[in-house]
Amino acid sequence: GAGVSQSPSNKVTEKGKDVELRCDPISGHTALYWYRQSLGQGLEFLIYFQGNSAPDKSGLPSDRFSAERTGGSVSTLTIQRTQQEDSAVYLCASTQGRGRNTIYFGEGSWLTVV
Amino acid sequence: AQSVTQLDSQVPVFEEAPVELRCNYSSSVSVYLFWYVQYPNQGLQLLLKYLSGSTLVESINGFEAEFNKSQTSFHLRKPSVHISDTAEYFCAVSGTGEGNKLTFGTGTQLKVEL
Image (cartoon, chains in turn cyan, green):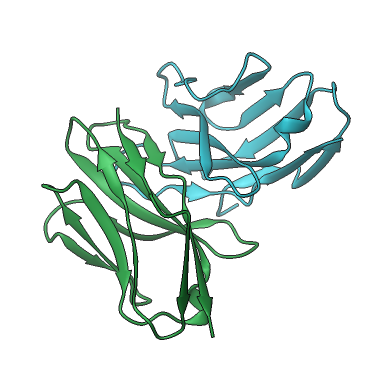
């Protein structure tokens, strides 16, 4: 597709369950970000992948959160043992990798933990 | 590493009035600066950016921002707002080096009232 694609668009899960959120970046984009946006909050950086470099995981809030990017393309964000405070919109974005390039966001995955 | 401060979480303004959304950044290296906008129920999109050259940059819908290196600021202004400008505005900064990640501020909610 032409844009960043995220799935699922909405996910309701029970507390304690694991969830996986998928991101398909724009073809050819070497850099990929995950952000979290909670109700009334700003954008919280989670993780950054740039080419073959080791990912910048400095934003992951706990060890229940992890992400991988396979083949330099698709990325999966995994949240284990979900908690209610994990409820948020998880945004994926990609760019061609240089700081000057525009970053393109997906529509987000709405996660609700009940 | 870079950081961004958006001091105003909400800015209410009447239609046709001028508005300024403040953004200050911190960085030990040269930077690129961006404003992204998120309209209600939509994803984030680029509004304007400063890369180099003229310190005053403009968007197609009448917003402008000026890079002030001495004050480490990149405030967003519009001389006359419209109801359709109601949105959340995010300031972001990136180092100019290869692979530098984008760091966002917490956002400013602009609410335009009749």
